[in-house]
Image (cartoon, rainbow, N blue to C red; front, top):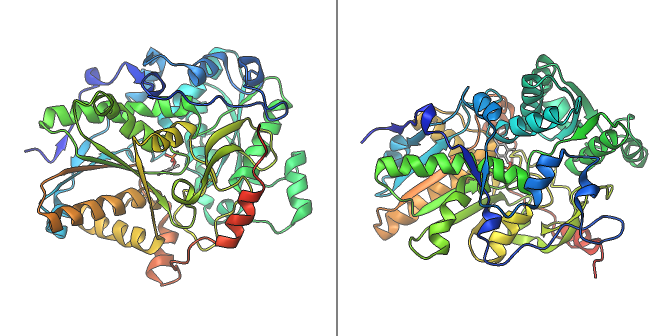
Length: 451
Ligand SMILES: *Cc1c(COP(=O)(O)O)cnc(C)c1O
């Protein structure tokens, strides 16, 4: 048995998969933030190109990957599916552990899988500049990279605390020709309002989204891009799971458990949803496990409700698991995945019983990352360590139960730029404190009212 399964470029998927075609119960529509009526394509036109708006509401099962996008994908795709034999041995588990390795992309994560098509469709429809936000900087780097591929300018609002803590991510965006601005900034009304409320604010993803959206709305040649949550993003990420399916077929395996970490939900959806048709028609069994940080427990402790995607209330209302759009994870949390909401399609999959969710404390995730680095050599991103930790828990269960299950997780990125978080862990500076229950109750009180 080979250590890793590689596909040739000619085996790369030519179409993305859209779970919307197969969801047993259709999803509730997104609502206009002002009228609270279902959103029409014209409501989204100031922000997104028509081809992405069409994908956003599409119920078509297969969506063609444009040749120009495939051409850029081929720089790093197909990515390998690797068997974590070193980890299996270290855990003395009878289970097989596999991972899909997305850290080989130019930006070092799965995010270019959607940044590239988003840049392509915008450029094709005549847009000159992309505005976006970024938390830790992975998405900003991916969008900066993709914009450069299609001759677009790119403005990235980066959450201030990360901007200060991760100067190399900002430097990478600059290297790709993008402008990276710490958020909140004085460039936008929503940024100025946040600074007025608290001049020393760390910033939040929700507020950075408000700034990027506002910037795009004020410039007719600019559009906004989002790195997760939205249906079209999840659709683009399906390239990961479609490749993995083919690779498991070559390995003569069908996985028992698929694990992915959940920030906004895009990598989890992209990796796991292409395996759902067989689960839905009952021909095969498979468990899908989404993993989130205990400090930001959207799926496991949030509420399924209509909520805004940002703090200022510019974005459409989406029905999703949410902690409330003003929820801020505690400052000690170093593992990423800090978004208050969850992709409506992932939320629907969990609500309809197609996927499970668990929350893991951060100390266990960093310990898992260090074990993996020692036995497999790859330094995982702290976000990916959530999936890794859950895969280890599944392998330990298999050991207790004497089961030879096939476990697979999505290794979404490398952690080369996150070594200060590993240092903080090794220096004993991180703790396992969970989110603040009182703050969560307060945050959920302010969910917008929808009839
Ligand atoms: C952004 C990111 C995530 C989480 O985002 P999703 O949209 O939930 O996939 C996970 N891993 C890495 C490495 C990331 O950069």
